[in-house]
Image (cartoon, rainbow, N blue to C red; front, side, top):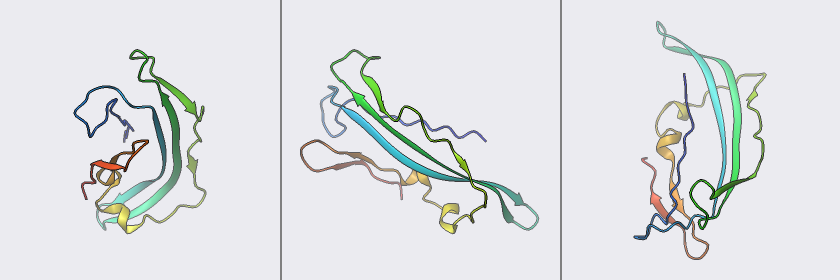
Amino acid sequence: MNDNFYPSVTWGVPVSDSNLPHLTSIRRDQSFTTWLVALNQATNETMVLQTVRWRMQLHIDIDPERPLGQRARLSEPKTQEQPQILGKNEIIPANAMVKPNANDAQVLMWRPKVGEPVVVIPPKY
């Protein structure tokens, strides 16, 4: 399996008709639990082989006045925490096996420095 995390953001205000760059920072803090499983096709039984937890954090400062390729600078953390392989496997919660999954539940919010937050893209579910 190959599951690549590939987020993208917009330079402009997503709730505006203007195309000017206004983005000043990006902050992400996401935690994940992943299970490696074996599925018995005869009995439809799922057996957890390994449970892995990991977290991705970042803070990127943006200077929209700089030229493309020079606008972004990683502020923190300089290194990410390593994934943790748990010594004791966890049971997969039932809600992890049905929709909405993480991708379908994501929301894009615009949080201006002044004014109320705006939902730009609502969750699919």
